[in-house]
Length: 311
Image (cartoon, rainbow, N blue to C red):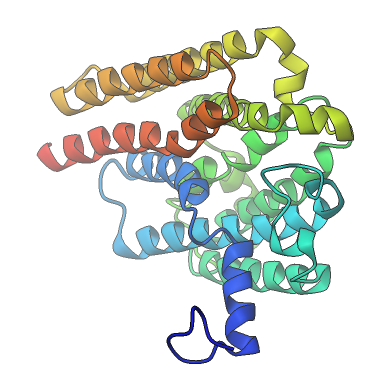
């Protein structure tokens, strides 16, 4: 088989690799970038500057691998629903080009690779990674149980925050006992506030994402925050953005230096534009806003990065 009559033959294995890459959304990085920026922000704050090349590699690679594994689990769980949704109807598992068994094996392999990276850090961080996997696996099934599954996704997408602080504890990966559990839960108050801020951001952008599929979800009976908020969806998104920015500004002192203040002002403008863009609730505008939300996190991280470099 040849593609468009040119180039080398496309083997069955090559086709499978392309399908697996499609399954983990390799060409759609917005998902793992939404995970990455708040994690890096927490990592920089916890380290009071540059953490280390080792931790940077672990958290970046771990974020990409974990998100990719989550895509596999999500698509296996939602295969029967996705075929009825315009945006997801052509996903590899939904169309049968990749089996559910293959999807689970791929997801498990990626999760194991991510876990291997965490094992090079601290025992307390390993405990948090197990909790993170549990929440991530629970998310696809939350759509069948609660009215706002985005609340569970918000928690899953925020687990990098406590892990970034826990990883700076002194105990190594071979430490065991009650002391490790104490390190895992003995976190400064800023962790809770940053986790809440990120949870609100996830609720905002994933509600916008759910607005893309609202008509399809109503037909097949899937529960989402876009449906739960009803006609107050845009107002709810605006409130989540506002609280997110306020909490970040408060906890990170975003007015304390020029780089951070610029990041705060740009971030506020971006949030306002996102809300304005979804006011008519069109699929195209809502999808555009979701795809570009990661720039809000990137701007805040850039402010913190530049500030730490200048300090």
